[in-house]
Image (cartoon, rainbow, N blue to C red; front, top):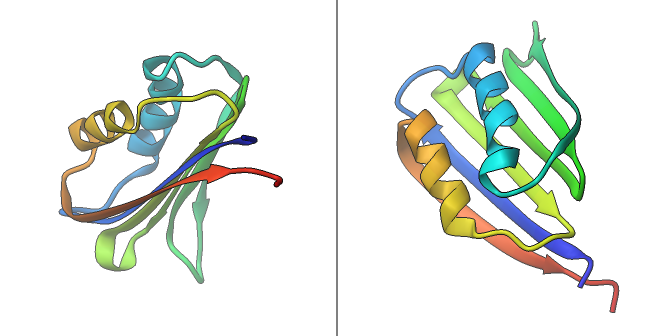
Length: 112
């Protein structure tokens, strides 16, 4: 196995700001037992696609968050070569984002 890739897509009950994106990126890696190597880098998208995008490089891969002001949409990827508990990530995210709807997909990535 190369790694585990958790994808979370949802609609929040309100716009997600850059401060919230930075907080999620700063804290989530520790919650799943991983160390940040660099980041978080958080930037505001404009004018074509307003919202926020951010990422951190972790010792085993990366975590990224993309928000879209239109419709309060959010997409989050947690990819790691080290196993982590999906439920731990989802519980953490639900404390920081009030989802009206959320879908998840978990893939085990493998070169075979």
